[in-house]
Length: 415
Ligand code: PLP
Image (cartoon, rainbow, N blue to C red; front, top):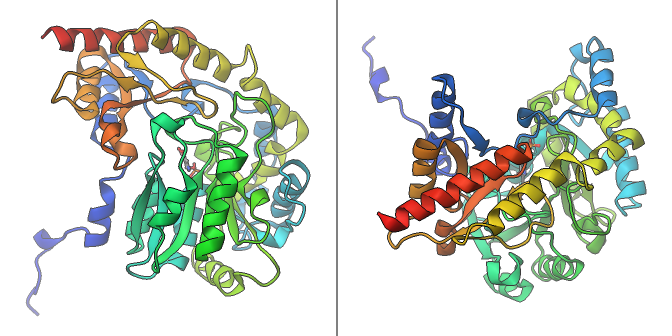
């Protein structure tokens, strides 16, 4: 039989081709890896991987992982091992102010990333809309478009401390809006949203019948007083999906261990959650080894170990302080406070006609520093003057990288 279509015609689907541009692991990161491989030392303030910067995981978690490696040979239930779900439910009940959470409300997955795709995929029909924070972690809008939905960015202006005005968010909701995404603490801005903001956003979901998607992967990483309070605690009468995992505070992103907790009044969202379970069953189960680390990571010693990172003397506290001190010395850099996460999101005073993307490319090629341009985190035009820096590297490296950013800015203004 003759070949109807030659293999030279192979192309990505329109869906994926459209979503691809949101990826953070783009050309810049590849170029940085090539430079490093060729022997040029690059200071990496790009990807948010604490392990890559040598911040160790809690020793008890690693010990558990080694002990359980033999048990991890099998599949688990599609929702994850019951013992592990029980530990997550207990964590939410006792430490996160959500007394109603049961193991059956918990689903484990290969990171927040997989669970975000599963839950959006199950919710969206073509043309459905999802409200996403702008700026925000681009995965949420990328997955929305991958699921044939439309991401509707809601502004979180720098002038308001990178926080949204819930009334403005409400005005963006329409008949096709199905969900409201919240990321708190926020990647890329480092903002921690107040209880008032969260209550306002819950009210928007209530008024428009939206599912709340709350990405709280940075919940343990805060530099302001008081405990992390999940959005769901402000919305006990609503279906709220709270996402978290071991990638950030436990410093184990390679394990791909995450969870989503569905809180809801009795019966609300049942058909939807059952459909999520059916879709999850198609991929059989999440990675078993990653799951076994979860109860250990949520045990008191490991949580104390994580909390120490953000206290004076802790690795994250030191890197953040080094970044703040170094940024304060640079007249062409302005950074709104970093209350949580391990990111700083300074504004650059760039010569007219230059964007953060241009700047980041030159920064890598001329100064051997990898940082992410602001445009990658949303649609707001103001982002093209911002740069996202991780505050994970040792203080001296962080300071040196910021000095090079200042040097490049000076050079660009005198060119
Ligand atoms: N959500 C946010 C806001 C993130 O910044 C990241 C990773 O940087 C993720 C989710 C991905 O999490 P995971 O490693 O659990 O897939």
